[in-house]
Image (cartoon, rainbow, N blue to C red; front, side, top):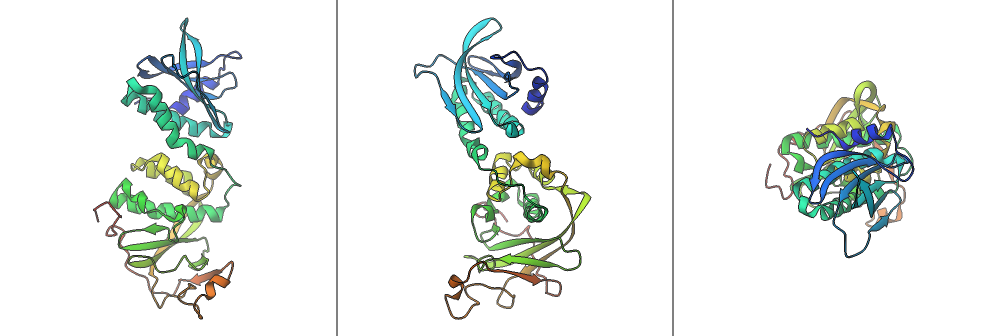
Length: 330
């Protein structure tokens, strides 16, 4: 098993080279023009060096706030040759760059004759994740909400496989967190120890879905040093085969940045209880359909209300039977 790029970069950064040069190590992956190198520059910034042919199109020189991609002539083992140089500029993203570098190396290994294309295509897939604006750190309540959704996703992946992530639509702007071919699920978390009370935001969260029934899945969580953090749950999902890039991209829509994972590792949750509820005509809710006269909800702003689920009848929601859209599977 190949050593992770992150660990190679960390090792190389302990002994950075003189100004203007790279401290490098062979990656074990070869392109058509030679072996790809993992390196750090004089500032300790992680870099991937890919040997390339001299391009008739002139040198490449692209920069963003987080990454740079350029072609330069470097002397390696006494020979001067051109390299495509992919470098991380933002020190907060060094760990994420290691994941990108792993993906780059895998792509080159699959198609060594077209290594520059492999680098460019991989960078295009990861670019949005690196360039996303990172806001303030999330608080415990926000992390609890994300943990609840990841916990439901974990159940779905165990039942349906990694493709189940396609049902997680809330961070993409859908009014419901999970959307299936036959129903939808809104997920709520509470850290209230005494009651199963959840908060609903806006008049759309409990509105009827386009297809099938709507269920509310509520998780009662508590902070616990023996629990699981959001970064830990992310790694559990990746171990089950979920694409790291796809998962981190969806999490970005929920304002979660993996660049801040070290700050979130100490916020751990244990699940005290879980309940599922059918949101039908008898379920207490504020939506466009429940307000009179029609159209009233459009004139109301900042709707937020709490529902005590403690004495409500639970529904039999079996996640193994939901239909993942376009999967053709139960």
